[in-house]
Image 1 (cartoon, rainbow, N blue to C red):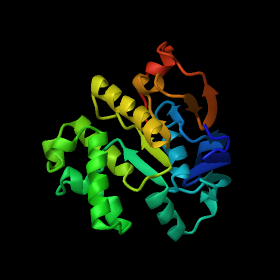
Image 2 (image 1 turned 180 degrees about the vertical axis):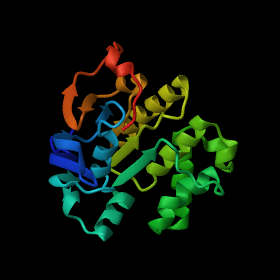
Image 3 (image 1 turned 90 degrees about the horizontal axis):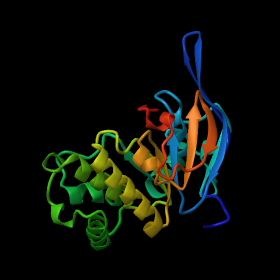
Image 4 (image 1 turned 60 degrees about the horizontal axis):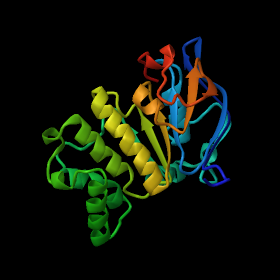
Length: 244
């Protein structure tokens, strides 16, 4: 593992305001993530998991503190620089899959490379490789409605890797899947972290992922702390459902 962190979060605070009321979603959160790590971020619904991932992926800006990804300070980037970050450095996986219904699995995986203007031959070769990597090479021409939930999430994961990101951000990637399929997806993510050398930050309440993570960060009322990996022994709190 590299001695230099890929992600550095320092003193990040995020406050949401609704009229006179303030909700503090993140309270001076700090941590680092290193290349090749699979990190689970767990907590109850509304604890701040999604808010934290949004700061790191450049989808939102904190009220205080800073976020550095691959040596670049995300919190001071222009909108154009943020678009480049999200296209070239960070891959996203969402609970709702986010696939384009009218496109085939192969076409969905190829979308980020089209946006990056990757040459056609190179793009087609990488699409084939990625679908093979997630075990869907035989489903390349099927559209999302022809695939199971687990297969759709595999397509979404393949798409997230299209432009060779250094960081993978996954927000409740097993939220719509049964427990067995969810564990298969988590095992796939762990294998991809190892084979592709990416760092993965995954918000989850799924015990299947928590046991597979290299590190576990727990967030409660916007406060982050690190907890030991569970090694298959789940405390009661880890089995309670919740989003972020």
